[in-house]
Image (cartoon, rainbow, N blue to C red; front, side, top):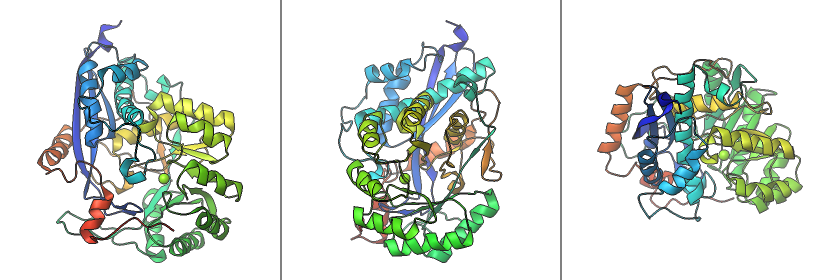
Length: 429
Ligand SMILES: [Mg+2]
């Protein structure tokens, strides 16, 4: 084994990054959201970076894995999965095969999926370190890029101007609570980043209001791809009614209803393509969903699918079954965006613009923010992921995590909403 590739040290740093008051079916984003930064340092003196979800359950898995990794090679990324299994969580309180994650926004929550979400950050960090050592970009380690730029979609949200009940700093986007507000937000995204596709996060207001917003987008941006994602808030009948109303303008409808059964029922009765990042989020969920024709597009999140190699395995499955592939996004920073871009560059069958929350984030731990041009990010050939760590920024965001009294360390959109409306419960239509 090349001694330069041996892991000498692993640093895991939980951070809190500021987040705007974006609304969804589960409530409103908190003023800050947890992320976890993984840094793998080799005996060759190279540092590799990874990023994933940062709630306490992920930290519980990351700590023993970080302790177990030194002495192994950064080239042995396939070995990470078994290592995570044997290292195990320090805490026996790991939730097992039940419930849903982030209030349901990311589908089923299982111990295996949580573990994969952590492994993904270690895999990315190992690939970054390996690429830097070899002088190769991560995409070359995945077989090479098939495109020089990756297209992303504008991610439109109903939102408030500021977080209620806190002194959290706000941004200058203002409120967006009606069709005119959504169109204004879309125009700003178009002007700043050149995004061609627009996704609206729905499930916030009654379906008629969200239909009106999508109609307003279609009028403002004729012919542009539009998506609507209520995170499973609608019944089968409501979903079909929305599909009838918007069928002529939607690129796809994302998770209109919850669960593979409901999605299959809708899919059988409409020509509008259905996409998901909720009912197909693990390999175990693939056979039933594909057999039932429940989805036409899987929105992969490399974090919870287990990393960049697993993303390519999912791509092969989708290709085999004639199912489209694109990418899901939660609040994330530049490390994850670089990882998404590197793996997306290797996927020939990527025919829809990927989601990204990134433009909503005003803080980062990378030294240079990536720049969207014409809605795309260039695929760098710089060794590794092509990003560098801003240690001062990382330290400041870790300080915020340390100083937090515990209210922000686990994402809870419903709790944030109840600070404004104590009796609030998620709506279903
Ligand atoms: Mg979604």
